[in-house]
Length: 88
Image: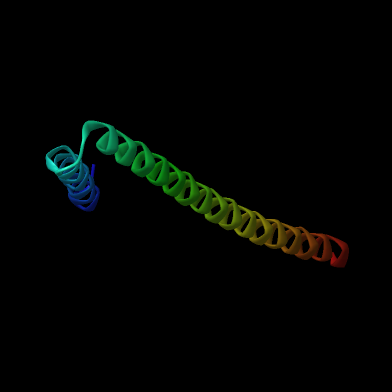
């Protein structure tokens, strides 16, 4: 794992621990705290799904662009080769 990934994972873990500690120590009843945790968990899950979908879309777009580029280059090379053969 590279340094950036380690720093990011440490930051995210620290943020999660801090948030959980804050919720547990907050001056609310257990029922309200559990409700807050449930709501926040759903929000974070939805945000994570959205980010994953964005990343997947970006990866697909990059893949398709590269595939198109390689296809065009291959076709161009084949056309050039075909011209070279027919000239001889």
